[in-house]
Length: 127
Image (cartoon, rainbow, N blue to C red; front, side):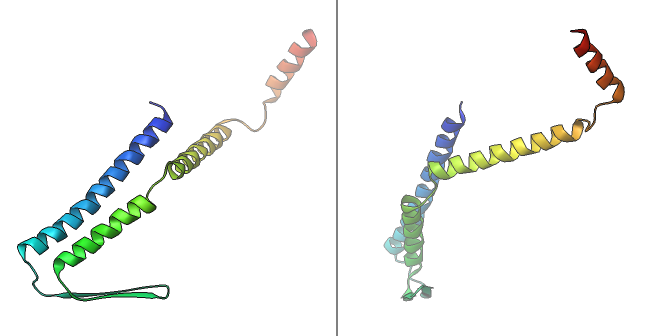
């Protein structure tokens, strides 16, 4: 299997898993409404830039539906892209090559021993 096929499999599994998680959260909220569990109402206040969202006395199912919707919208709108995966793979490959190059340079002697150099000079002169 090539790297691009592996990346596509990872991308599909990620998208499906996050979509299922968002759908299950929203479904659990729906089921809480259907069963009639309203219990202690909760409050939620979110401020983002100059926008403020306030949920007062919201049923527990509301929080599940809101969280599930956020997960779904984030997955579909942004999520993980093939370009992001390719960039991650390229960075990992570059890091591995850099580590290999540094390992090779550490194992190679910096200077050639004098007797080896004279042997190479003699062979060059003979030919």
